[in-house]
Length: 228
Image 1: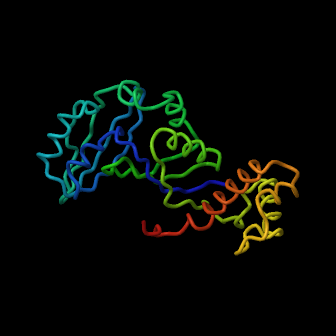
Image 2: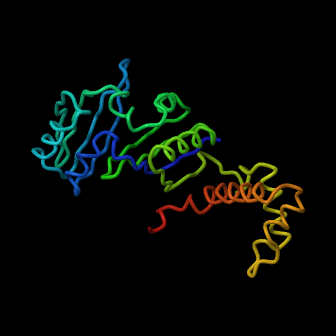
Image 3: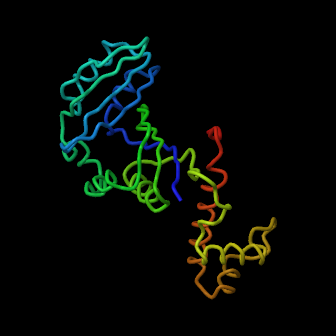
């Protein structure tokens, strides 16, 4: 079932992060206008930012080529920006697997909103299935820092836990029945491993993955986000 997610990608090398740093009180919303070139055109809306500071930052940012103002509405200016660097030249030195980034561009996902922050991008979008979301998240966990704010199902939700594998469900149920989650704890990780006839490290991994899955389906879906 499709998923809707909102998350932060903390990576200072993403385009326009220097602009966000120069304008800490401004709101920057980015749209990627894909074409046949290696990099898309950028459409950047800047609200509450001084024009001189914005354009000075553009002039000093190698990712920015030519830029024009498409329109102004109140305190918001909308720019169209031609990229000044290829994808490989700009992000290649900072990404462990450039082909992985290129693959994400064709993954089963639609990014609906990108807000440029002082530390990276905040994105919200739609993923066709859980595997597409996990692929996206794992890439950015390797190449920056990924922080999930919200993850919900698009449409009628399934019962919490439906995303667990049979082995994860078995591990959780066994640990619960033996008292592993009791306070004080009535069973050790080794006790659970013995019951399941697997190693303690395997039990630990299954429980961690199962708990992460449940958190994503319950606590992580809280909106607005929990305070940090």
